[in-house]
Length: 165
Image (tube, rainbow, N blue to C red; front, side, top):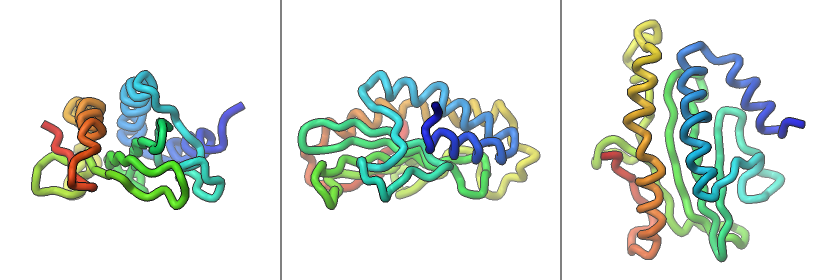
């Protein structure tokens, strides 16, 4: 039986244009399994809170350990445009699940947020599968960047923007 989130995600994905579905399939088939090997698992509800279901346009992975929860979120554009954001956080296990650290994967040091994929100004007709592959290649060091982020969990700065080098 499919999970409730998996069904919502597949329904949302079916409504997307082909280039967006291709980018989603790259993330789902290549990045998610790598994170699952690192101990993360895809969840239907955030932080085991039944009142916080994961949105149909997101993939959220969590890893519970000791006094904290590490989470990855791939947040696809709500208007089904071919782009996504990557967020990570370490939160307290006990409610209200305070943020211990949080970050977004960005392309430049001056950014706080970054949409990976099609720029807003580029017409959708010009976005190709090759462009999606380039986007995936540029963002493929996500696991390495965020593992370094969690190793530095004792740093003084509680939030950061991770630079994808």
